[in-house]
Image 1 (cartoon, rainbow, N blue to C red):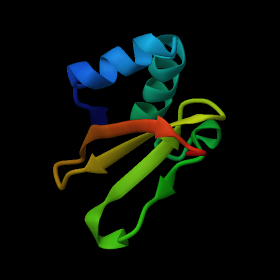
Image 2: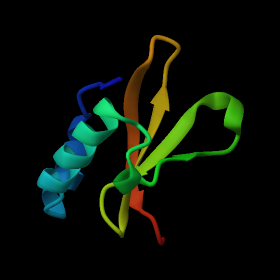
Image 3: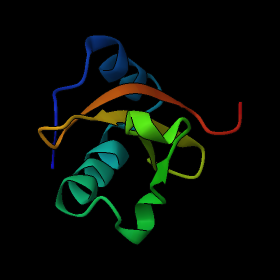
Image 4: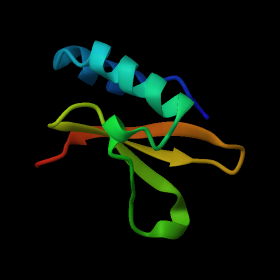
Length: 82
């Protein structure tokens, strides 16, 4: 499964919090195996919308939508604990 190019605001957020390397590593894991153990992938509610999240690190998660064409688009990156 391929993840589409990130929007500029999300790239800026990764840069602001020095998460670029961590995100690139986790993105690679997700594209090869969405259920890789280090991702802690979760399907979010409502389940019928195919919205998932995966762990970038212990604090940050990426939220994405998976399309019927088996492509993914990151729609948000947020602090898991806010």
